[in-house]
Image: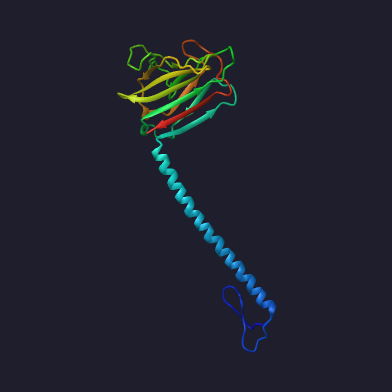
Length: 223
């Protein structure tokens, strides 16, 4: 039997007069095997961290090259009269353009309208034109004009001369695009945008059908 033990792992140390037991050798071998196994696992973990760091750097490079970012993705789980797409945590001023894709859930024969405002502003600061030029006519909101045949709206948002401009195209069930329309909001610029508000009722025409469950809203930004 050994007289002494090592300091850290308590391995057996024999004096000249000690009897050497096989069980002591076996115990030492088990301790050494366990320590080497733990060391190997630690080295593998370190390699994994290095690999993850490298992958993260590669992903950031890809994201930097791909300037189009998905900023918001929301799908309604129930009918509602209004939807607020909150972008207050994003630096809107860092984007050249925003793209909003609205896919409205509609019945086969019954369409409805959706009206849009920015930051909840309901003053007459919105124009609605077949071009994106300025116009003296102002409205309290901008109509997206959802119907049973035209269920998807593509809007691009950008700033020009300090005003938040928007253009819109529609996609029908048969995948036909209709004429582009748009206008601008004279109350704020793109960098001041905090929320895109969508409503089922209009200040001019009153309450309408609710925005249906299953409708989706995806906002992209390009830098």
